[in-house]
Amino acid sequence: MWSVIVKKKNVWHQKKPSSNSQDIQLPQYFRSARELAFFLLEEYRTRDQFVSDSLHRWDHRIELSSQDRRLAMEISIGVIRRQLTLDTLIEHQLTRPREKVEPSLWTLLQIGVYQLVMLDQIPDHAAVSETVELAGKLKRVRWKKMVNAILRSMSRQLIEEIAITPQANAIPLSYERYRCFASDYFDDPETNFSRYVSRAFSFPETLVSDWFTRYGVDQTLQIAQWFNQRNKLYLRVNLLKTNRESLLAELLDSGIQASLGKEPQSIRLDQAVPLESLVGFDSGKFTIQDESAIAAGNLLNPQPDETVLDLCAAPGTKTTHLAELMQNQGAIIATDVGEDRLDNIKQNTSRLGLNIVQPRLIKLYETDLPGAPFDAILVDAPCSNSGVLGKRPEARWRIDDSSINELVEIQRHLVRLALDHLKSRGRLVYSTCSFDPRENEELLKSVLNDYPGRAIVQENIHLPGSPSDGGYQGLVH
Ligand SMILES: C[S@@+](CC[C@H](N)C(=O)[O-])C[C@H]1O[C@@H](n2cnc3c(N)ncnc32)[C@H](O)[C@@H]1O
Image (cartoon, rainbow, N blue to C red; front, side, top):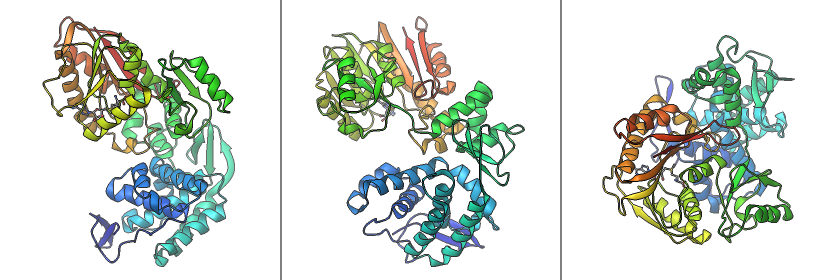
């Protein structure tokens, strides 16, 4: 059973999934990359399912080479990330309003245009013919004509020229590399910068205006581009099992290009690799963690034999860092509201050889914490993820003022809860993977107004791409 669409007054509306003979049937086996990409995108559109979750669920149905599997992921994740750009381009090729196009047909058009415009390695004729063929496979022969017409019209618009600055007929492919079209599909960046960046890079316009107000033109372009490209990954070395230099030597010996990072435990991977097959993973020599997140544990700097609370702990990436810093001595109470996610903490501590962590399930608006008062507390709060939009392709479409306001409510509760259970000489780190001041310094300062004697003594504000993920950490004494 698949997405259901109904036509009312000549306009297509999407209904909740139900059984209906008109639905597009999920194939028993996926034997083509584009077909898998189509169903991954439909699952995301109609059921709000992450691509990685659907892939995991359908693993037994996927009969694809690893290269085709990668192509399916590249297309589905790319379409989610760049949907506003694709939609703008498709809308310009259409002779009817978007609402009159069936949503699943729109998905197919997005897949076709993405291959044409964003994937250099796929020849234009293959992007067109494979997408038209997919319409047939989906038993939607009546779509073929329109898919063919739109994709051909789009391919005629592609010109050889590559621009180095933003312009109304160009979209970014990488830093200072803009693919040009024969027509101006976007706003003139000189006169309407935020709208240009929103459409050409694919971000909500409010988000771009906010960056523009805070950082200006050049930095906004840097941030937007950084989020749209593949970025370097970092490892946090488990210093209880090895040291950075030894692990780096092991990686280099096994043919992996890597270098030392700026945190005392970090190694930067200079090439894309399947992480879990890396030398030293099974034996617990490292954890995959961005350098800006490693800075959170280092800022709290928990000591052996302290009693520490990690209030929003699952899946335990930072908890295990705290345990390593404590030389696996003392106690860490690791609380979270997600029961399944707490199990991941146990898997991580066991792989890394750590036994001082006690996972505990708490309520959403908890008031009573086991093991209090604490010497040190980490509050790694749920947030908008605005600093990690590259790693979470769907997250950009969820950020708006109302979602931020809801998050700020819960963040406020968490900081208060933590401060109420901290020893008078204790210290707290508040951290998020957002770089929106409303979720960070503004929130922390406003809560501290009610706690005379407490103050922020150090702040790390990580801008995305400078050099790694965006985020915030404030140390309170
Ligand atoms: C940013 S994630 C934490 C990531 C974790 N610290 C790590 O490094 O692996 C935020 C976590 O907060 C949890 N959470 C959300 N609301 C909460 C609440 N009211 N109390 C405690 N945890 C909460 C979520 O379940 C989620 O696991």
